[in-house]
Length: 331
Image (cartoon, rainbow, N blue to C red):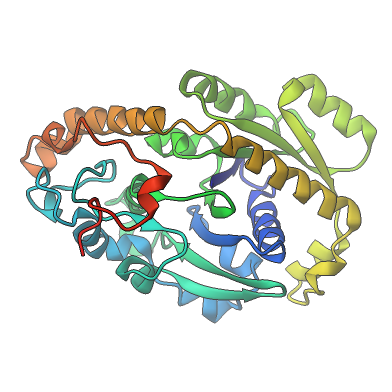
């Protein structure tokens, strides 16, 4: 299942996504974690030291390799150079699976060992000084979107993406790529402001959305969130001595996380697992194609010099059954 964490800057979404990843690993789920925030902090939140976090390979720097691998033998794609972030898979494309070894993971993922298991961690790469004034951060996130477009994942398999803060999450069609989106909101007016923006987009595109109240100090905070977001409120998470200790670089064993917060994380996992039954792969593929055609018309055709609408395979529907080796996967 593909899970996104979104919210305004400072809401605690990176901390909560890291706690959720730890919780999944403790429950023996298979997890690929992706840091797609312009501020790359997920590695540190998962316990990497400064040097280890800085050494994570940048997905954006590996985009040519990613395109070349995913293109496979798809006859509708004339060259890897004509692929853009929204290029959908078709017959002959290579697909990514959570539980496999492949050149994309070799180049972009690193294994992170946690208290109760291990996960794969990928990162878009930070916005560097060389990018200032000449690059858009969303070009880096494009590597994540392309991988999600070619990902087939099943039940108890998780791809957890820490998205960039605020309404920047809407700058691409990637916000429609998820089975469940957890919007992290503090119990303040500013805290729920992103929710109001996200709710409209979520409704229009059928995106499953749940609000996770963070830094909740009592029933009054929960009452405020309920009044602002209604039934979209899933759970509230309180202050955590465990998190404070972790942020000081002295993490305690994860099993010592406060019981109330462990229960809240289980509520997130339950909601994610419930979303599995609602999967609509035809709609997912249709939305993928919709955003590809929009991008092709607005800038992609001009940039690549190709008719990118021709990349769409009208008979192809992405589906988890394709996770088994098949004709869609060239040897």
